[in-house]
Length: 308
Image 1 (cartoon, rainbow, N blue to C red):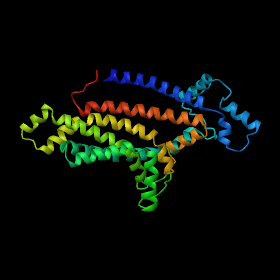
Image 2: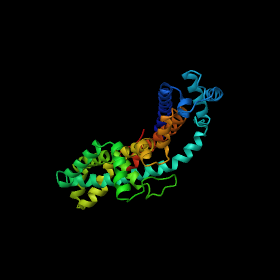
Image 3: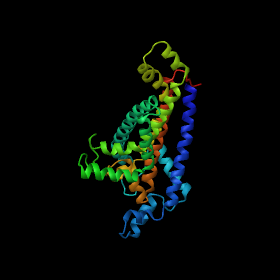
């Protein structure tokens, strides 16, 4: 186990440096005039431009800028955004609401996907199984850029069941509609993976043995089969958690949630390279750590799995 963890940590370090390099290169290539993009239509004086250019090393080459960024990052300094705010403070303000939103979305999607997936596998070929197949296909075909504003219009503005927008200190109820919208991006895949895994395990030899010993069908399915079937589902949920924390840009934009995705969208619009790279760097770390934890959970779910 120790050797496996060390090997994974080394892989995480390489992945982290590779991801930050690619993101920094994309922002560098996309930059036209970040100072003017920040000011909008207002003119920028030569003195202000000179100060900002020196502060953010905009007159240096790509590799020099990347070196300054990595030197600060390795010392715990994420730098300052083009607006002058400390990126660490911005991240601390944005992180709690995004984490709350992502965890709520993951919880909703996992509950629906596992329950419906197991039931579809038990009743495969039936009305419920075909109905869930149709629903998952519709969810996969409907992009969140359409679903989010439609859900806001119908359930928040017309029916007024939920708040149309939220704040940084939003309650779980205020985040429920955005979380439901965000959960639709992953619930379909999780449901189909759960169903497929349960169907395969229902045909395994240990299931026939458990039934021959007189165990009830409910215990066989929800205890023995579900435990082995959750391995690919747990992997998918771990990946989805990292993806939801970083991919909630549209949802946070539509519902005006001041989280990580909202700040990332603003940074991309204003060509705020330090803000985008700083946020993405932290998200890469979170994504890698979550996947490591998920891999280590395999042995707890299935005693047959051991790491050399």
